[in-house]
Length: 490
Image 1 (cartoon, rainbow, N blue to C red):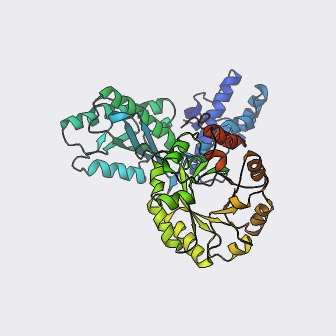
Image 2: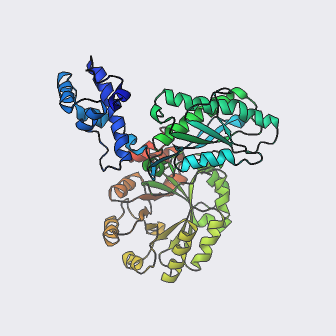
Image 3: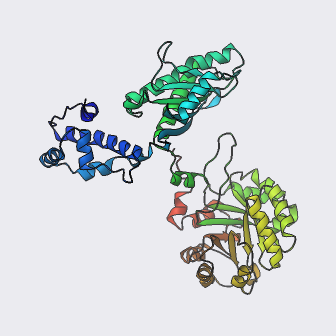
């Protein structure tokens, strides 16, 4: 039977309508892309000749159909999902795809990890090894829709949690087994898994069922959804790098219970908590609106009064916040970094006036521990020259005008571009501080600043929330991340 007959079901016959032709071209295009990927061809875009071959017709015939039904082949080609060409991940020409999904809540929650790929490849080897190597409490079993009816591709279940008794076994061999099998069968019927691959591929599915799960309906419901989602993700190579980079600084692991933000998506608003009164500071923090753009600074006066342990105190009311310990280190750089790190600081601040050796030690230790090194250039006459003397570059450079030096409502911003020009090969953020108000913050952001550091405008405000929003509304990206507008989308 010609490939076109198997693919289209049209036996090379001319379609009756424009819609039929578009459907035929879409199916043939997907088939051709898969063939190109497996053949390791540079381009995975469907061609007129290749599509005609899949449809088992001459390319001139296809050209005629396209003209007659007024169909733009390029439009059809461009509309095909880009992930189709990425669905076939090769290991010695074998498909090897990975998927994961967590669905549900409580003790009945489902977590699925799976592999899907060719029998004649790593996934097939894992399937055979798992089925033939049994272990106590983690006995692999084939998924079945009902006894004597497995789905295709054949699927091996591997319990993640040790099965200790018949009650545990009943949950695995009952609702979990059926849910996974049904999800696989439905994925084939719906076209998620290519029908022509069901005898070539196998699936290895690791299944979590909590020992205290009790609702069979929920166990089935959640495991079905998790398996279906994991399959979809595997076949589309989810997640994209863009998704990972965006979410890694915003995500909160459900079991860990808090998130650990990073700072490579400016601009940010850093709130300096300089008032040396802990209870008052906690009340201020409680009024700050939620935003991924906010950094909390444990100010120098606060740390001098309570020590670095105040960082953990702040975590009680701001556990998801990025917290900077403003140590203004002038000596023993490594020691001060270690002390702040032990109290869970996300970043530490050294004084730019410190000796070069101290700054080198400070920055090196912060980077070794995976936290950020800030250097505050307050009163440094030539910050560019000072930075050139360092072995390692800090993550953040603070251009700072001291409280006792503040006059007027403007700040000098010419140094921002000078820093960028002088260190264009470095990756770092620039913060500005010293009497910042919304007007000067806007000026700083437009001038190239990545972080604006504010203090009294917020901490001494009668309406802390409103004062913070005055800054968060300065740019579109800062507005987008405010709690009132942020919606979780998976």
